[in-house]
Length: 78
Image 1: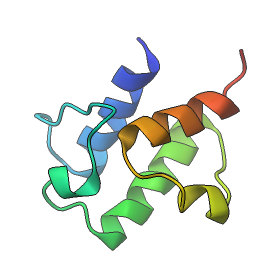
Image 2 (image 1 turned 90 degrees about the vertical axis):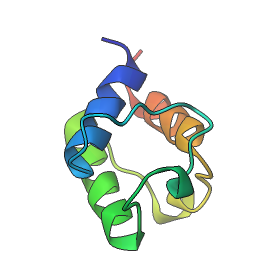
Image 3 (image 1 turned 90 degrees about the horizontal axis):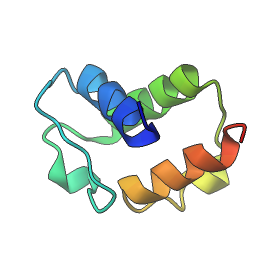
Image 4 (image 1 turned 180 degrees about the vertical axis):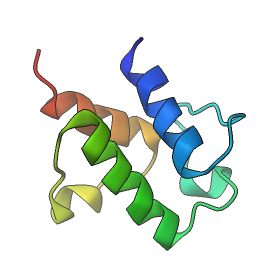
């Protein structure tokens, strides 16, 4: 399973919606219920699932799911 598929599962769990299909261009406004609280829940779930931690500064640079994927990929072992 590739990184995007693994991340998609996290999105489905956090937003309790098995129909979500993420794409690199997807933004918060594209997902029903993606508000500030669910964003925090999403980041916590991603950090737990991938055993990584994002800095506050880095989180502010993420503009879409593609940026998030790149951030995760940068922290995973090769």
